[in-house]
Length: 571
Image 1: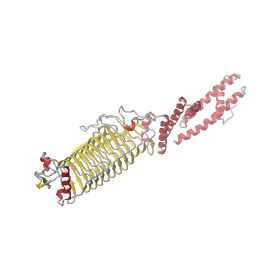
Image 2 (image 1 turned 135 degrees about the vertical axis):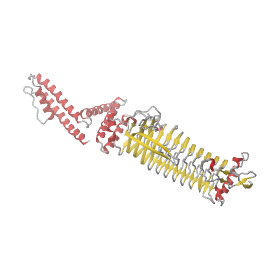
Image 3 (image 1 turned 30 degrees about the vertical axis):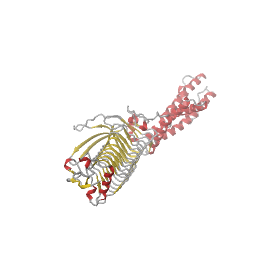
């Protein structure tokens, strides 16, 4: 490669928005007999095509120069810039400057980038950086990138991708410092599967128009998705780990997001907004420690002073097998005013919180560790304290819910057992009582299922006895939660015995006006505090045996009443 004179390329910052101040003149030598260097000759003379090796050699020579300007490659236009397996270190300057570059392929596979890499406003069809190391800051702001691959790459310092438009991004990466994708756009695939974010992360105002994959990603510091939009075919956060605050505020979804198996050991703020479509949010097997989950059900018009609301899509939330701590569920109506200023954009948000409609929430085998049911008593009462189902929107659920089966009585018994334990731990005795009733009803359903099964006759007989015992406990005491049931059944027994006594006493030619005496005798026999004496002329062993049996039942029912009343008052 023969060099003759300097490159004639000049970049005029007035022709586009740029971070370059003043006119920039290329410091590199011209290529062969052309007026431009190896990096700009194709842009200015398409018939001249330097080889990939010539471009690589000239690039590495520029980095090794003592002249700080030689590490600037602004506006270069080449087919392939192959820097794979290279150890990139700037001798005379402090950064590798590829701003406004136009590249079909930028190959940094297994490369080691020791200094700041600046690629602002570049147009790159294929950015290949698998197994690469970036030891200093990286800036790819305002770029147009068709395909970017950062599998097994590491970013030691601050990485900034603000305003970049990606078609496809595959980023199984470790970010050891801050990273920003603010106002970025992904038209096809954005894959951050198994990526580690060890410092503050910003996906605010980001648009995901295709598939968004954050499965198994780990966020060790605060992360925000404020005002982001997921409008593509898939939104997967399954198995993410959020160690500090996770903020999904004013986030819009047109596809059901999958937050299954996420682990939020820090605080969280989820605000789900479905402006035009129904969605189902899956928190299956998730661990949520503390923070609000808000379902936006309406939004104010920006062009009026009156509070008018547009209908929005229905949002359902599934907490199957999840663990909920101090989580606050509520619906929300928002009004967001956006003011565009010359230097910045300001957001003014007014909110109106309402109690969440539990018909859109499903709990199955959910563990409650600090969850406060007392906030939702009104809605729970309206739904008859049923929490295991919701009104499912007519839309496909996320992958973690697509194979959800109808719950068995065993599942539902466990559901209400955990709800009862959670309510009791938080001091909500009323909710604990209601959930206990439903737990016992589901246990009865299990026994009844055994009776109807094709198991052995002995097993089915045990099911019949268990069903009868469960029914008896419910009828007599409401499973120990309804003292009025004990009173009702007691008076029923007394009256029934009164009729029996009256019939038997009449058969012994007792006067027909002994109803009061029969009732008194039945009452005395029931409470057993007074030895009952039948009227004269009716000294029958059978009547005495019936009186003793009634006293036997009365003793049990009085004890049961005392237990039920004490339990009820305690709750």
